[in-house]
Image (cartoon, rainbow, N blue to C red; front, side):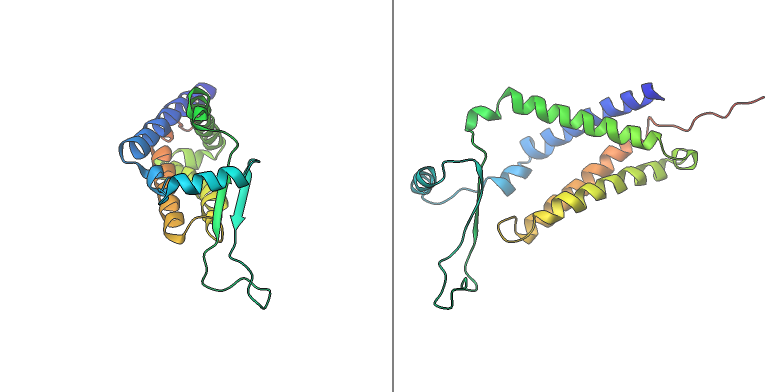
Length: 186
């Protein structure tokens, strides 16, 4: 079974990488969500560079009103500074993304291999099992990205929908390799 788990994980990891290339490089999915251009970018960049010197996530609130409360219907801005520049988007980032894809797929294949023989005997059940794992990740990562200082609702829903489809595709691929243990005949 270990050999099947490794093969399923490697093919699943390759599927995740191909998915990411198609969705993000060819169709620009993450670019449209995470890389919106700021009007008068040079001035905004200079202000941020002068005022944010330590890596971290920052909120920029409107000034308090006379009641010492934040005024309603005024924007709150979220600023994320990871402490690095464009040079970090190079080989190390790509290697980490590849490792993440393969480790995720191998762990998922391993969890599927530990399920009951009844689940492993049915392709739809195996796919559903992987989708359930994906829904846990979506619930505990994507959905909680909505709110003040985070993503707007429509982007959160788009990312959630994307990741549900991604986990479905991963389930379709991994489930091809994980089979029930053949029963011994006497």
